[in-house]
Length: 90
Image (cartoon, rainbow, N blue to C red; front, side, top):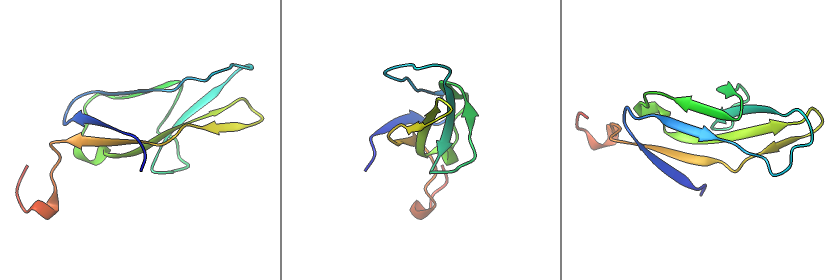
């Protein structure tokens, strides 16, 4: 199971990605649940008002043009999200 973090509903989520050794220009992309379509680019990614469907696994990919490295997946859980199995309104 991937490491995880919790964030409260409507709070700001800030993720950052760093590399141990820079070998030249680096290209960053952020992905959720293994999607190939990036959520954003750059070493940081932010969601200003987290909603319940922002829960999931997030990952940073870094490329130097020749090779790609992927961060371990980070499991984000939004606290206060509505659980349809519970049968109650949020």
